[in-house]
Image (tube, rainbow, N blue to C red; front, top):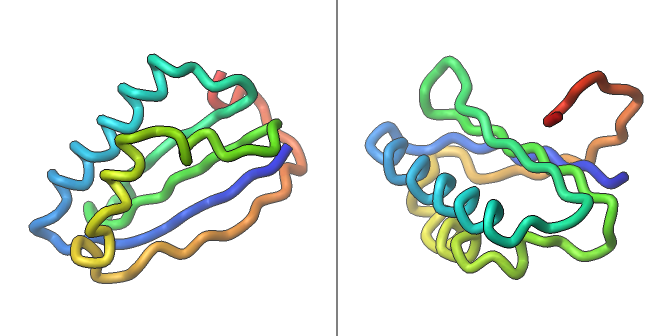
Length: 99
């Protein structure tokens, strides 16, 4: 299973917009129900840092076909103080993650 973590920091005035764009992605994912895909987004305690975790058993990235994800990516550079940085993850073990 492939895993990725993306972390970025939005400008203080962009938090609400960023959360709305993220929620639209989840609404579309709930409709599409891509097999073998687990995804979560978290806002950290500082209120402006976001972390996205994605795990995929397939070879294709389901987010590439999610229209709302494209809209989320538009203007991300303008919303951010610290741009998105992606890190590949290797699962060592987990318990009940996203279940």
